[in-house]
Image 1 (cartoon, rainbow, N blue to C red):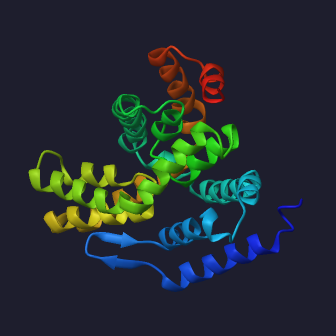
Image 2: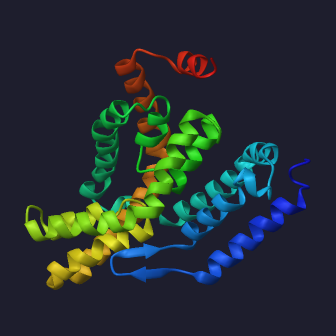
Length: 264
């Protein structure tokens, strides 16, 4: 309750939010800057201990209350899923199976790289999904914000905020130019559960295949929505459990052993 009564913490959060929203979305070619990015940068500066704006103790305690925000986020996600459940019956098998791509891509390709660069339990949070808002909420709810898994998922989430849209735009443009995949397949792949990444991905695909513009926009939107609808449940019941077992198998360590070594 002491943290909830800290007026300075709430005032700073409010001021940062207002400034970020006033700046708004800024576009520079393929690069899209979102208010969340400005909030992250401003939050970084106010949290530097040498500035003495916030104490380390206050920041450590306030992290425990992030669960409240996570619960609100999951309610918002749930309210968006309910009215759109009918899309599951009309989307078709191909759209629903694309969720397997998010699963296989992040674990099969992401986990080996994470282990090679020296990540430990952080790899579980970083590689179990595409790490957008609902995926962050799942990790924080299960492991906590300050856990190794929490650090991993937040690290990937911030990377997505900083360069996600730009990277998605470049990658989609490359594959569209190469002609290896049908434009409608690329449109489905653009729906990764992030509106900004979807918009950045569809723009170069439409530029290469303008005759498919309406179909690309419709399929990308449906895939994006479906990823949100299925992604939460897929992450909870499939991706995260498989990710934990895969990590334990390849490292030969359990979570308890990792945490014990980290605490030494």
